[in-house]
Length: 510
Ligand SMILES: Cc1cc2nc3c(=O)[nH]c(=O)nc-3n(C[C@H](O)[C@H](O)[C@H](O)COP(=O)(O)OP(=O)(O)OC[C@H]3O[C@@H](n4cnc5c(N)ncnc54)[C@H](O)[C@@H]3O)c2cc1C
Ligand SMILES: NC(=O)C1=CN([C@@H]2O[C@H](COP(=O)(O)OP(=O)(O)OC[C@H]3O[C@@H](n4cnc5c(N)ncnc54)[C@H](OP(=O)(O)O)[C@@H]3O)[C@@H](O)[C@H]2O)C=CC1
Ligand SMILES: CC(C)=CCC[C@@H](C)[C@H]1CC[C@H]2C3=C(CC[C@]12C)[C@@]1(C)CC[C@H](O)C[C@@H]1CC3
Image (tube, rainbow, N blue to C red):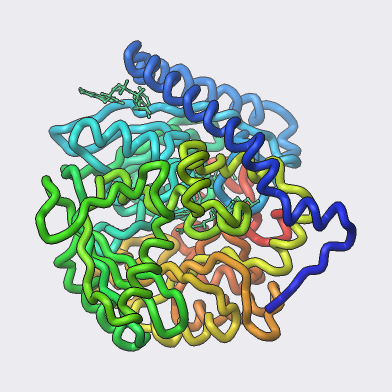
């Protein structure tokens, strides 16, 4: 295992006792922030002001772009959202050098129950949207788990969730985008209107234009999710079941957690109207509840001890959607090691989790150094047939557990993701978050070997994380044909925005 020795006593204190700052300051501040935004959203809703205000807010974005256009254009453009507020693990250095366009678009605009769509602005978060839709008996077809993820970030980057084996990625449930282009004009695009632009926008990281609204597909929601936990102590069997369930599509939600190379849990789930008699009710979103991944581990240990095989539970729908939010998957245990302790949960659970933005804003240099050297945060997307082989490679290079497995479909559409046969192809997102224990782990070289494996398998890397690829390697991983065509066609685009690589490579992030 890689260890980083703190250089000074102060560094040691900062790393080991970060939880002191988090509990005494960041958690109360996060709580106040949540109350403020709920009140603000409520007032906006009761005044019904968001749809009316949208047009003038878009005009303001246009005005800022036109000001840049009529100036000396010595800098390029990016959104003015401070980098510490984003969910990407790193801070983008380019934000300080570019002209920042303020896009203060934070509201849900319209729920269309006839066409089963919701229209919203780019800074609407997943938590805000799932709450708004839940009250109407609706849900997004794909709800990426963490509350703070925004619609804009998920469109321009990507979003994946346990229903993605049916609906695809977040981009596949979007039916229309409204953008302000580099010449200050407003365009809308869909699969029938400006289709080239529509297919080039996902994964473009804000390098084609500024997103100002998105129309997204919704589905009818039920009150609960019935979840079945299937434990495995053999990787081949687990991979086989996981792959079969993903392709069969008899269940609405599928995910797996690996706790060692050979053991883990496959979870299949479906929306239901009522709690059945075949399982217990488990409101995992309550402040006192154990972290989700810890509960799953308990069921796996029970199985190892020969106690139970398949367990069935009923979970409230929103609790299920955001099941990894309270513990940031398993990342919070590194910051608050006793965060899952029963006394802590009952006393302070209602203040959890701290806002990611505040954690990023207050991250000390010593902690950054530690994460650079001895921590992996990566999501690699590989064809599902390569799952077992991939786990072998990940074990050899990283040895980080738990591992998150989430199947998803990629439709054979034009754009950055190339599918090599048929109408769609099934992939799996392999999420690795934690401290690597592999012998000889070294951040850059180990990650580069993984990136090469993924490219060889014709897979992709999620770009909120660090990419160590060169520009050429990056262009091999992502098909730039349509993207390059759009950048040459759209007026002033190349002048206004860098290429995707210019925003996501490790050198432009700290
Ligand atoms: C466009 C729209 C149309 C709706 N239509 C109906 C309807 O016809 N019938 C109905 O019963 N309910 C409707 N709702 C749901 C509505 O959000 C809740 O019914 C209402 O907010 C409940 O009040 P509360 O005190 O519980 O809200 P709170 O819990 O204080 O907040 C409601 C939550 O909803 C979200 N929200 C509410 N309004 C907005 C907004 N304008 N912009 C962004 N986010 C917002 C926020 O995330 C907030 O967290 C609609 C919501 C929206 C956004
Ligand atoms: N379950 C999941 O699917 C998860 C996904 N993620 C990842 O997190 C990221 C989302 O985080 P989030 O904080 O919401 O987004 P960010 O603010 O990090 O934005 C991500 C990118 O999208 C661009 N962007 C955002 N809004 C707009 C807009 N209105 N117009 C033009 N470009 C825009 C940003 O451009 P600029 O650089 O100019 O600001 C940036 O390059 C995604 O990359 C996603 O893949 C992370 C965890 C889980
Ligand atoms: C499900 C998918 C596709 C991805 C999940 C990624 C998350 C595990 C990470 C996204 C943002 C990350 C951050 C941190 C941990 C891992 C994520 C939640 C920190 C909280 C780690 C501690 C730092 O001080 C701040 C980080 C902010 C971002």
